[in-house]
Length: 211
Ligand SMILES: [Zn+2]
Image 1 (cartoon, protein in one colour):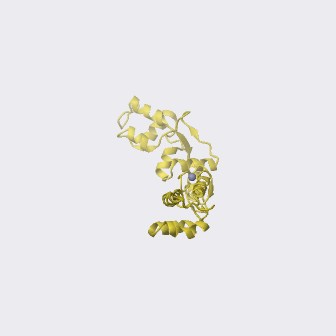
Image 2 (cartoon, helix red, strand yellow):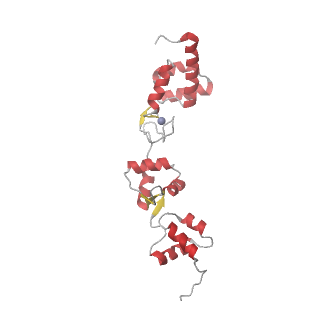
Image 3 (cartoon, protein in one colour):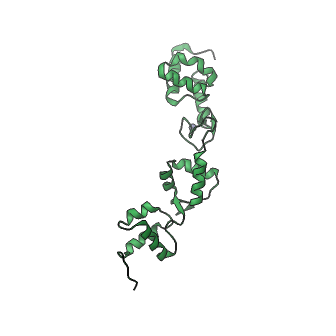
């Protein structure tokens, strides 16, 4: 019997190592194994199954937590880079290798959803799954945006809308709307809402344009 300088590992503690190896990170183990250091966990894992706990993998949630990117950002980057992620089960956690994680983060640090507008998401739905179509809007939001303006009898194009803004907005809202138009972007949802509501009210009062 080898003498152990430290507290013996209990069966339930060993079970934690088996359960989390290759799936979970440092924090997960340390939370479940109070009193054990990370080094001790790693050494025990080597004795138990001949490899470290990490096995060079990170869960998608961990990568999101530590990088500050959302899960949808990471998934989009993964698709763009055509990464294949291991999974702990049919509906289980995605596992990324060290290399995959590095590649993803490098890609995301320089990536905008819309490079032209320097946006990380669609300005209307905040989504990243659909491609950018126009004015900071995705392929679903852009046609909807234009249709709404058309129905209200207003132009959706920034150049045509710009000179009309003063009739609908004032103060900070006007400046904000003008800025969006100058940048050739769709109006932010709240401002578009104000304008569309006023235009519709005007239409229903019988002052609709001649088209
Ligand atoms: Zn959208």
